[in-house]
Image (cartoon, rainbow, N blue to C red):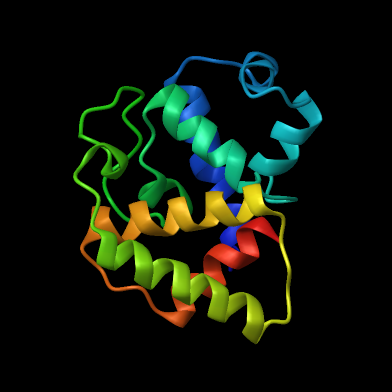
Length: 147
């Protein structure tokens, strides 16, 4: 049975192919090597949160779909207003921040500030975009992506 990393890799490949890009041009657009893209697509690694955010920003890809497989498919164009462009829900953001801190403490992990900001941003956009509540399982899934 394919693991989550492999599934993420398959979705990254779909994004790249829908953009009519080869691995070399896709890698160049993300400032990574072709080997890195190849490894991601084969499930031998995962893009860091910052690269996932770059794919979202550069290509309008739905992060919910890219990470979890939920939603329709990547569009190649931004067809929806992203969660970051909607009004900020300060209570949900506070909940995400608290859950991230709890998750880091629970796993006895420390991460760099930029990674923590990316993690909070990804989780916030996910819960706003899907109308789901934040929970420990979701935080753990995203923590595994960036650590």
